[in-house]
Amino acid sequence: MARFATTVPVAKLALGDHAVTLAALQSAGYTDFWTQEVRAFDALTPLAALAAQAPAARLGAAIAGVYSRGPALLAMQAAAVADAAPGRFALGIGTSSEVIVEDWSAARMERPLARMRDALRFLRAALAGERIDAAYETFAVRGFVLERPPAKRGRSLRS
Image (cartoon, rainbow, N blue to C red; front, side, top):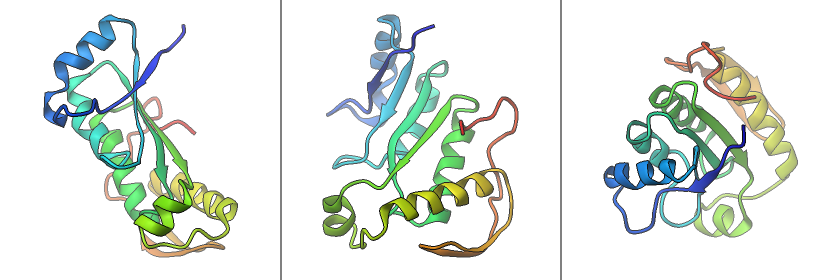
C-alpha cells in the first residue's frame, strides 16, 4: 500500500485547531503527517500535540536535529511522542544546517557523521530502556535511563 505524507503543522493554524484539517487531508488520501524543524516549531512538540487529532495517522519527525538538543532531551521528546502515538511514530534525526546549529542554537557543528552515529547509538539504547553510562566520540552521557521508554508492542519507533 502506498503511503502519502504532508508537512504539518499548517501555517497560521494553532496546534490545537488541526483536527478538521487533518481529517480533510486524510479523506483526500494522506496517511502520514511529518514535521520539520526550521523557524516555527521544533520537530517533535507539534507531533505530540497533533497525535490525538489524527488518531489513525502515522506521524514522523523529518528531522529532529542532533546538535540543537542534548541526547537525553532528544530521547525524552521521542519517547513522549511515541507515548502519544503508540506504534505510529517514526523518528527522523539529522545534523540540520550550520545556520540552525551555529547561528541559532549556539552550538558547534563539528564532526557531523560521528555525531549522527553517536546519537543513533545512544537513542537505540535509551529508547530500549537501557541505562546509559557511556562516553561516545562526540559526547558523554552518565546515568541516564528513560523512565517511560516507548512500548515494545509492534515497535513504537522504527529502527
